Length: 239
Image (cartoon, helix red, strand yellow):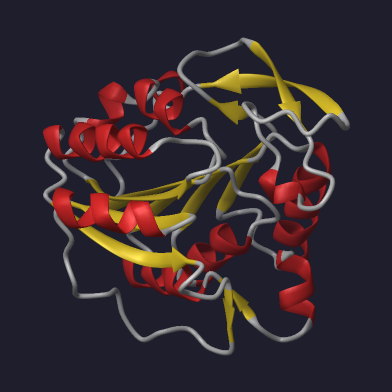
């Protein structure tokens, strides 16, 4: 899906890329959990940010690695073929989506190819944020969001973690699951939630990047109504 749009000269998730670009600079760190082929990791690196990218799917990871090296950003981007979860060193089954490698999931069985993948957690990485003014984390893990957040409880307490971008897919999570994550992040001090992409109303691709992060903030009741009408949401949580 992503590759076809890029070959056609279009962007992918333009509002998400725009938000990442706005949050990225030479004094920032961008952590990409579920990096796919690297479009958002490369966007952050292009803005000068240091990047840590995690992608468990072997084919996606191969393309991600090639893209990083081809762009000369291997000094800015550290990349790992790992599934981020709530614990370090476990093995899980990744179910391959035959129609979209980016839709491969640890939770949805497509009755096709499977891969055994190693896990890590963000807390287990023992990341040092002292050299950065701000940190952004992007999470796109096809139903595994709860476990990723459980594995970064200590990281969520760091004041330099200013933004979290999460994709929610209603094929994999219930509305109650999503609202629980909203409350969980607000309990950690994320007081501002904005909608970056609302599908199917919003298109996945576009001809150009928007100029800024959306200004409209959304509360829990409004989010609940939105979830009932949407298939996929990209949300930005800010401190």
